[in-house]
Amino acid sequence: MDISPILNGFSVVLEPANLLYCLIGVIIGMLIGVLPGLGPGATIAILLPITYGIGPVPAIIMLAGIFYGAQYGGTITSVLLRLPGEASSVVTVFDGFALARQGKAGTALGIAAIGSFIGGTVSIIGLTLLAPVVAGFALDFGPPEYAALGILGVLLISSVGNGNKLKAVIAAGVGLLLATVGRDTFTGAERFTFESLNLAEGIDFIPVAMGLFGLSEILYNIEERHNKVHSPATVGNVWPSRKDLGQAKGAIGRGSLIGFILGVLPGGGATLASLAAYALEKRRAKQPERFGKGAVEGVAAPETANNAAATSSFIPLLTLGIPANATMALMFGALLIQGIQPGPQLVTEHPDVFWGVINSMYIGNILLLIMSIPMVGVFVKILRVRPGVLAPITVLITLLGAYTVNNQVYDIFLVIGFGLLGYLMKKFGFEPGPLVLAFVLGPMIENSARQSLLIFGGDPSGFFTRPISGTVLALVVLVALLPLIRKAVRRKSPDPVEEKIS
Image 1: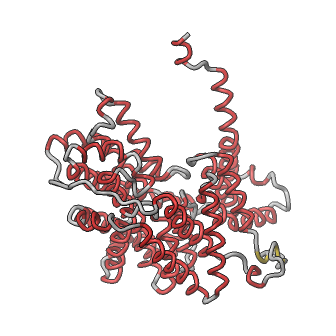
Image 2: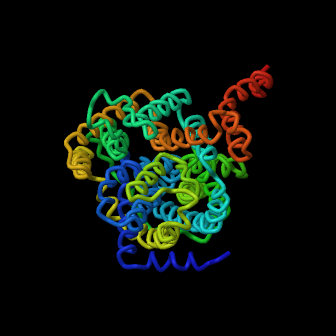
Image 3: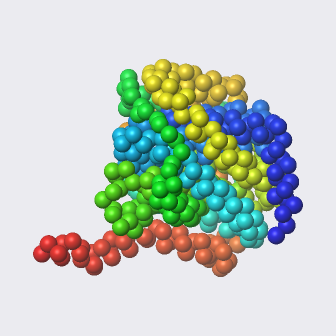
């Protein structure tokens, strides 16, 4: 393996400007993780307009820092307030807050910081070794393969993700429909524009992202947490004892592996990784009743796994151009804004971006470890600020950011419209993630499918005659039939619990 590109990537990261943006990213990420409800997705969406004014390398380094930095920030509220700042920190509440009530809040935060650092570092090493291999393999991909991959990505996110599967499929369908608005790239015909000049060029990604992730989250969380004031637990010694480290080391190792694997899979991500790691530790524990009452492993496993997953989710984005989750879809959009197409050509055409982003994670992870413990006191003060004070400021920043992209009032109305749509989706149990992912992948699926049909002379069976696209489409069929297969298996196999009762 040629390590010269990796070393060049470190030289890119160590430039003062890029180091500064890495630091800014992880600090913002930690702050956002501490503020319950906003999340890295909403923050990245709000900050997308800023990326216009800076280069691609510092822009993506900063946004990546926000993403993995938020994973640790969410731990602080989980431990001190029993209020997860991030969905991936929900499981940490069970044992983290129990430890805080026992006067061991510092221990919980210290274990979380160490686990996050190790999990993130292991995942970065895996990313460094695996990403070039995947990118090299993906160089054989043509339009049929990209069309099949795009369909698989949308279907996986819709069927494997959390929540109601039917609602996720509906949301993805709406995203695909929105992606068709504007002029047809092949014929020039206008589609769903309703004779509006503003819609002739299609719907811009930024207003969609800022509305569905930024404004909708703010509106939803104002309603959920308006005027609620919490009293954070007291933080004592933050360095865990040798006994605590001994109990946590196995959980940290297993959490790193689980997080890395699930982060790569579409629909997996940090939340699923933290749940899976916690469930594994509880299942293999000699005293499972300890979990939920202050087990150190119950903090170490999910916190390690969610950081490992946050890092490894960059593999399909950078190498295949397929976002593994909603936040990666926003990163995909940020790269497109910079005129960079994520995918197998990224490592050869833009090695500074590819290796700069990957190697920045080593630096960012070290910065997180150094800052996480000393800054706990600052975060505790931030937690006392009412949501009613922060929300108007955030809304103002969001709308101003939307306007500055094209200097059009129309974009502000788009953000408000998608913000209201996202709010209603949340109220009725629809996740915005599948919609945004489908909206991002829609043009790639359509263009690649139509190019493929031109290559095949209009014969769709050509998709199945090519080895890679045929295999991917077989997986599409399998994923689509998976719910039916599960139902059939459940009907045939009797419930062992019911058998015991009878």
